[in-house]
Length: 214
Image 1 (cartoon, rainbow, N blue to C red):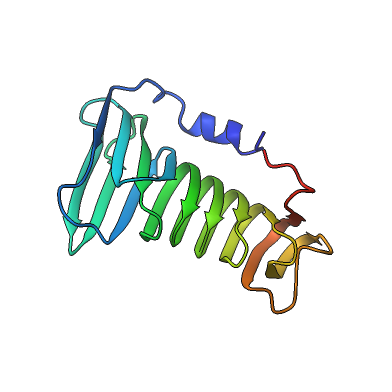
Image 2 (cartoon, helix red, strand yellow):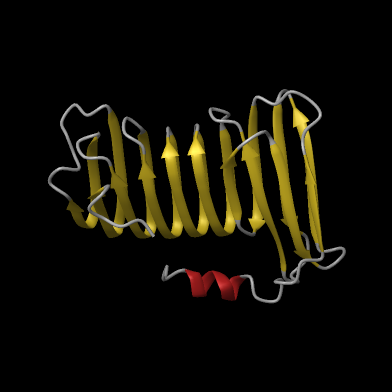
């Protein structure tokens, strides 16, 4: 269990009931996706481009929109009052389509291949698959399962980073209060790069097959 999970549950308390759901696929060509969510969980999976959203907000408390601008699908969800408000998003996206995520508070779970840029103010980020990834978290935790040869840059201002990599597949650069890198995890001149920064937390890099995935 992530230690931030109770904190997130408190942050989203009062907006657990789903008022309505929507699901649709864009009717125009999309070259990239941008998601901006003030509160809520975001999942990214591989598949034909499709969006599903669960709205947990009272009427008149949410600014919800989507548009395709110059080939970019832009999804926005912003709370407009102090009342509890959240939107959970499931994005299915073809491998290789770049995705940019900006989340205020919540949990982000990415599975698949493609360029991911994530900015998360508070919460839990989990990514598995092929990069490149850029992950920045304010307060929370980051868990990574990159495929061999991936380029990953991850930083958390207050929290920990955990990564599990194929043996000798990446060159690891880590800066943290506490650092552990398994002897066979990092290889000089490895095909991939793992750059991890947790100035007041811990970085733990293990090897696939020897560290069980949650």
